[in-house]
Amino acid sequence: MRKLTWAALTDVGMKRSGNEDAYVIAEEFGLYVVCDGMGGHASGEVASAMTTEEVVAFLRDRDAGDLSLPYDTEDGASEMEKVLSNAIQHANDKVYVSGMKDPKLEGMGTTIVSVLEDGDRLVLGHVGDSRIYRFRAGTLEQLTRDHSLLNHKIDMGELRTQEEIKGFKHGNIIVRAIGLKDYVRPEAQTVDRAPGDVLLLCSDGLSDLVDDWAIENVLEANQEDLDEAAQILVRMANDRGGKDNITVVVIRVDDDPEELDYGAADFEEESTVPRGLLDDDDEDATDPGRAAFDLGDDRDFRDITDADEGATAPHTPVFMWEDLGDEDPSGAPKKSTMKLGGDELAALRTRRPGATLPPRRQATPAPRKKPSIIVDEEDPNLPSIIIDDSRD
Image (cartoon, rainbow, N blue to C red):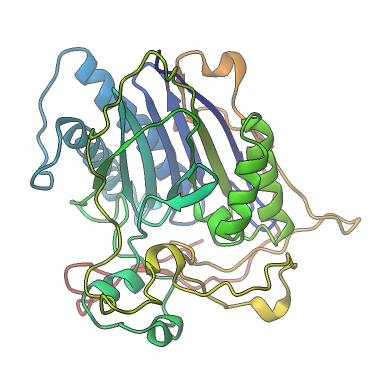
């Protein structure tokens, strides 16, 4: 028997006035999605919610008999990789057109990470720098690779050494997002599933503030209690400043190993280490998409301080904007947590545009913020798209 057990949690964080993240669990299709919206005001929230809704709508139409796959996919993609890629591209069309029609939504966009069941395997699809991790046999591995300008320059051979990677100053720029252009190229891959695997889908509100080794420790200690794992991960991000919305979906593979025969040579996963980074004989070579910086031996937790302002990491936020100071008169930071579960998730679990949303924190008037930036992946020298989050 194949079975996936899951838990999910999304949190506004400690600095933002609203939650622009969204997630959806559609068990009838074996679909799990996390989106991190951007665009400022309400538009980021609309983009993420619309994307979750439209990905599910594409699979629902397919289940009803529409087997068309109108969008191009990578050469050699499997049937289900094509399906997930088409679902994401379908969502991109809907978000892009909505942004063109409504001036209030112009420039809205979102990242996406998704998992789709495919028999004995799992299909992963993503755009942007939200992430999917897998915890297996005591080890955490990042399965997706950020669509960042940093990784693009590594792939192009413009950054080759660890010193060049560490010195790169534009970690706040990504090269792909849903809804900003009339075309997006999702990255899809297929991985095996083994009993006991734990997958983590998360927005960069978690991965920017909590180190991979800390995530690994939490998943290892809470494999049997996924709700607790999700709550601890969100709390850790908030304890380190909570500078962005935080969303996590934790999935455990509970397949019965005695009833399933995966085969000794089911298939071989393709390496995600970028080609052309370092020489093959370089013993210190690492995958910058997962660990461009050396963590060193000192791994003690510490709080975010003023000295950390402006600091970047290999997985810096998809889109950067100014943090909003927001404290109540007692001096305690305000916080809002929304967790979906129980009867609310009977069939389709998603936050839909226009639906009544949980109460949000009211922010004090914020100063004009710097616009977010996304560059063209095919030619970074072209003029950048400026996402002006400072509109009134």
